[in-house]
Length: 481
Image (tube, rainbow, N blue to C red; front, side):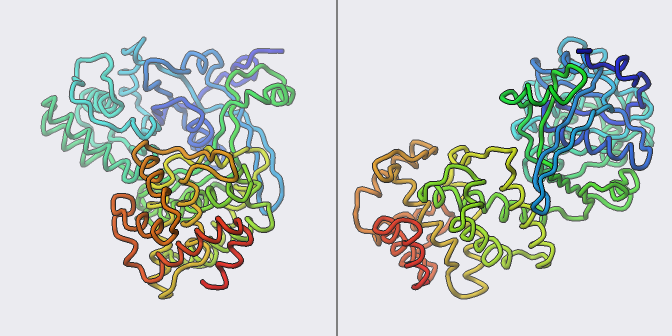
C-alpha cells in the first residue's frame, strides 16, 4: 500500500499560509482544518495552514512525514439517519516544532499572506508563566510564544497597520480570547516591548471569543483495520469525529467578510455576543449529560446511547430538556428545540460509545454549573419545582452514597466531597440528608433549603429511590410534584 503524501496523491501545489495554528491534535484537525477546507472549496479561499507544535512532544514529525495530509472520517446521526463520510484533508502546508527549529517558527511572522491565528492548547494552555522571557527559544507558555511571534511580525513589517492578525482561540474556557489578550499585553509590559507595539496589537489585530462543539474520539485504534480497509493508502493520522459541528465566534461584519463561512454549509456563526450560545450548550447538552448520569446508572444503563434509547430513561431525559430546561433559556423556542433534537441525535450516535461512568467526574460541581441554574430559573418562572430535574438532583445525592444494590457506584470526586457524603449518609433520615446536602453553600453557592418545597421534594425522591427503585420511584414522585 502506497504512503500518503502529496506526490502519491498528485497534490504537490500548496496554498499560501494564511493561518498559523497552535496545536496539531485530533480536535483541531477534525474541526478547524476541516472547516477551512470547506471554506477553500466553497469560495476559493485559498488558505494554507502552518501548524505549530505547542509543547516539546507532539505529532508534527508524523504530520510532515505525510506532507500534512490525513483522512477525516465523519460518523453520526442526522434526523434519525446514519451518516458516514470520509475526506482527505489537504490544507496543512507545513508543521513546525519550535523546540527543534525556532528559526522556522519566527519566519512564520514574516508570511505576507498570514491573516489568522488559531489555537487549541487545552484549557490549561492559556496561562501566564512569569518566568517566560523574550529571549527564550521558545518560551514555555502558548501566550508567550504567540507574543514573540506577534512582536517579530510587528518588527519585520515596521508596524504596518495592514499586517495585524485575527486571533481566534478555541480553548474551552469562557472569554478565551479576552484572557489570551490580557496575558499577551502583560508579557508586552513585562518585556518592555514598547507602546508602539501595544498600539499596533490593540488597534490592528483583533481577538475573538469562541465556542466550539464537536465530539472527536480521535485515532480509532480499536477499529483501525476497518478504517484502513476503506483507504488506498497508508495513513498514520486517521481521525474520527461526529458529523455535528458548531463554531460560534464573536465578531462583526468585518470578520464575516474576512471569514465568509455563511457561504458554506457549516454551522459557523459570527455573532456580536456568543454567551447565549454558550449558555444553550451548557444547559442543554452538558446539563442533560450531568442530569442523566446518576439517574441512568441507578436505573441500570451504562452508556448515553442506552439512556436515550430506553423507553423510560429516554422519555425522562427528553422531558427534562424540552419541558424544564429549554423554557428557561432566553432564545426562541424553535431554535432551542432544533438544537435539542441535534443533541439527542448526538447522544444516539452508534459510532461513539460514551460511558456514563466516564462523565461522572466531579458531578457535584458540574450539577451546580450545568443543571442547577435551569432548576432555579424554572422555579422563578413557574413558582413550582421541576419534576424531572428535582428527581435527578435526588438521584445525584443518592449516587454519592457510593453503593447501590450491593455494588460500588463510579463516584469520582475530591476526597473532601466523597468523605462529606459518607458522613451525610450515616443518617437514615431522608429529610436530614436532603437538608444537610442542600444547605452546603460550598457546593451550590447558596442555601437551597430556602427554595420553597425543594428540600421536602428531594427527601421524598430519595425515599422513593431507595424504597421502590428509579422507575417506580419516579412514577410515585411525579404524583406529588
